[in-house]
Image (tube, rainbow over all chains, first blue to last red; front, side):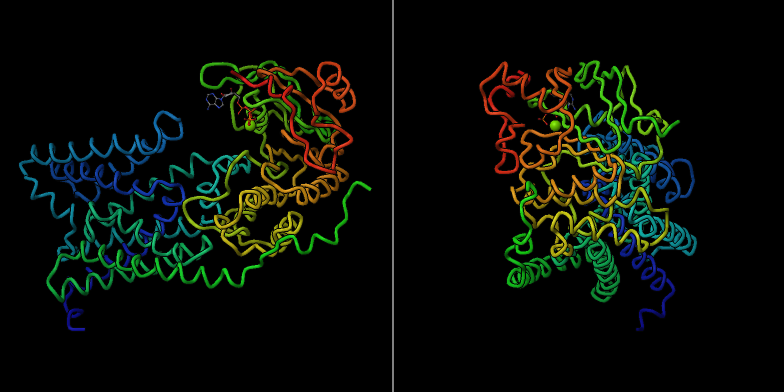
Length: 289
Length: 265
Ligand SMILES: Nc1ncnc2c1ncn2[C@@H]1O[C@H](COP(=O)(O)OP(=O)(O)OP(=O)(O)O)[C@@H](O)[C@H]1O
Ligand SMILES: [Mg+2]
C-alpha cells in the first residue's frame, strides 16, 4: 500500500500490468503456430534498435519498435516464401541482432552495461512519456489480438484451410509478427528484452495444462500473465530483487503448479467421458438398400 | 451465362513443385451435383492437382476456373469447402472440436462481427453429420486420428459450400463412419453440390462416384465412368479393384498392387 505512494511505483505497476496482459495475448498465437521462440529472436533484433537510438540520439524505445517490426516482417516473409524454415530464419536474426546491438552501442561510446537496462528491464526509470507509449502500443496489440481472434485463430491453426477460406494469410501472419515485435519492445522497460519471450510463452504453457479450448487458454494465459507481472513487481520491491527475473520465476511457478493440476483434472474428466461414440449410430441402417 | 459454367474447370494445367512439373497438362471439369474421384498412387500428383484447383499453388500454364471465374480473381470462397490431407487437426495450443469446425464459417463471416444464428446452426449440423456433436467441447488433440479427420470434414461441411474438395478424407476413418459420410455426401450431391474426392480406398463411397480420373506421374491416364474404368482395369489386371461393386459398402476396399505401380520411384 505504502509502495503505491511513489509515482515511480505506480508507473512501474502500470507498465508491468500492461506487459502481463499483452505478452501472453500475442504469445498464444505464436505458440499455436509453433513459433514460441519468435519473441526471443525479436528481442535480440530490438537490441540493434536500442543501439541505433543511442547512436543517433533518438528515443531508444522508438527506434527499437521500428527495427523490431522491420526484422519481424522479414522473418515472416522468409518463412512464407519458404526460403528458410521458421527456426532457421529466427536464428539468423537472433545472432545478427545481438552482434549489431553490441557493435553499435560501442560505436555510440556506450558499453555493454548501457544495454543491461534494456536486456533486463529498468522498471523504476519508466518515465511518463515511456508509459504513454506503452499504453498506446498495448491498446493496439489488445484490440487486434482480441478483435481479430477468429481470423488469427484460423490462420495459426491451419494456413492452407485459411487460404481456401479467402483469408489474406500473408497479411495476417505478418500482422502477428509485427504485434509480437511491438509487444517485445513494450516489455523492454519491464521484464527486459532477454526475458520478455518468457512472458509470451510461460503463461500460455501454464494455461494450456488446464484448458481444452483456445479461447479459455487465451483468457487464462492473460490472467496468469497479469498475476505474475503485478505480483512480481510487488515482491521484487519488497525484497529488493530485480523485477524482470522475479516476474518470470513467478510465471514459471504458475506452470509448476498448473501441470499436475491439469493432469488431475484430465483424469477426472476421463471418468465422465463417453466411452462409445458410436452409440447413436447403431440404429442407422446401412445405406446400400 | 455464368450459371452454365462448370463448378470447377481445369484446362491444360501444369503445376511445378521443387523445379519440376508435378501435374502435367491435366484437364478436369466438374459440374453441379457431380461426384468425381481422383485416384492414383502415392506421389502421382493428386494433392498437387486439388491444391492448384483451390488456388493454393500457382500454375505455370493452363487455366483454373471456379464457378466460371479464373482462380486468381475468385472471391466467393464461401462456396468452397476444403479438407486438406493432414494427419492431425491439432496445433500448438488446445482447441475444441467446435472451435475448429467454427473456422469453417470464416468465409461467410464479416470482420468484428459475432457468430450469427445461422453460423451456429451450420456448425451444429456439420458436427452431427460426422457424429461428433457429443464431443464438441473436447480438445481435438485428445481425439483419435480418425476422429480428428472427421473434425476436418465437419469444418468443410460447416462452410455450406457448392464445391467440396476432399483430399483423402477417410484416411483412418472406420467403416461405420465412412458409411455415415457416404450418406452425408450423397445428400449434398443430390442438392447440387459438386464433389471432388481424392482417395486410395473408396469403400462405401464407391457407389456414389459419377466419374473417375486416374493420375499417373502427373498425367491423366483415365477419365470416365466407374464402369468403363472397372472394365479397363479388369482388362489389364487381375487385382482386387478400388471400385469393385461387389465390395462397395460391405467392407473397405484396398488399392491393389496394380495401383501402386503408379507410384513415383
Ligand atoms: N513441396 C514440394 N516440393 C517439391 N516436390 C513436391 C512437394 N510436394 C510434393 N512434391 C512432389 O510432387 C509429387 C506429387 O505429390 P502429391 O502430394 O501431389 O502426391 P499425391 O498423389 O497426393 O500422393 P499421396 O497419395 O501420397 O497423397 C511427388 O512426387 C512429390 O515428391
Ligand atoms: Mg496427397
